[in-house]
Image (cartoon, rainbow, N blue to C red; front, side, top):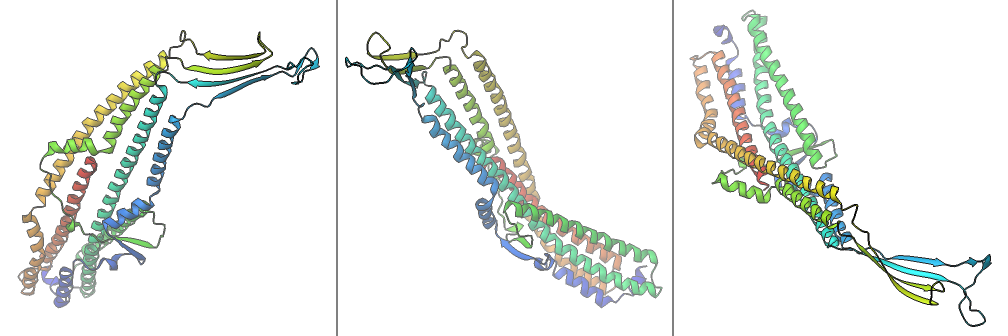
Length: 433
């Protein structure tokens, strides 16, 4: 069969294959849908993301709302005005005029009451409101961290997909050339039907790979445009930063990373702050055992032993039946519950840091200079293969095997670059950087 395949137009095949190897990364714009293209660096994408993302905007509003509650907690209770005005007595209307002796005839009562919170309840409410505002800020930071991590993943994944697409398409072009040449040989009766069908099946499988890759690009585009709040369906986002341009280095000490994460990771700090909030709630519930005092000066005319009576009213509930026992006990259990959640968050953070550090370490080891040199030199081997094929030292099938291996090596090289960048992004995600 090899001898029969040699009857192909050798110059045409060599020219086609040479074109593929010389230009394995043709312009990506040729493979992008016919849409307007928005080229963005990672920094530009982050700026647009922060400026326009509605989830971040909603989280910002929540922070402002919680800060407003701090101001509300500082306010005193409004005073209460009570008044009792006499209208009629003994079936007769009584006016507020003076009688013949110069004495006031009517009666009225006026009292102003002010609630005074004891046991520093007002200060404890301010502490709770302040902690809630801090929790809202940490929730905002955690939302920002998660969305930024997703943005980075989509950005670099899209770059990897766009680098793979021209490789697939160029490979398909070469297969189509071979299929067309084999069609002529099949019609002439020089090759078997099974060999032609084998080449057709390879081309069809590659077409399906291209379709699947384009679907993946569309999904990544959709996620990226949602994060950037791009509503133009005809706009294609194109990353401008290549995977190889990202600088990745392994931190010196894994132990130091956990201390950094405990100071910067928003989720872990959020759980610690939740524990603080529960402790403050317990303090407030205990303070509620102490009754508040209501004070109020009052004035009564013509309804007491003296015509004009001035008094001072004091009222407070007696903590005999209800000493807030249930709420205090509930607050104590809430503290224990939150402490357990915080301890679990610390364990989870430690394991995540260790795992991310290990994955970055092994990925960096794989991405060493020896492998880089191998991939860089691999594309130059095609010259010798072409020369060997010209001299009939190798058959077409052997050459095609090398052809496919070369494509696979380029795919692995691009995937290896993506793995390195994503491993670094994962470590930074858990560090809260």
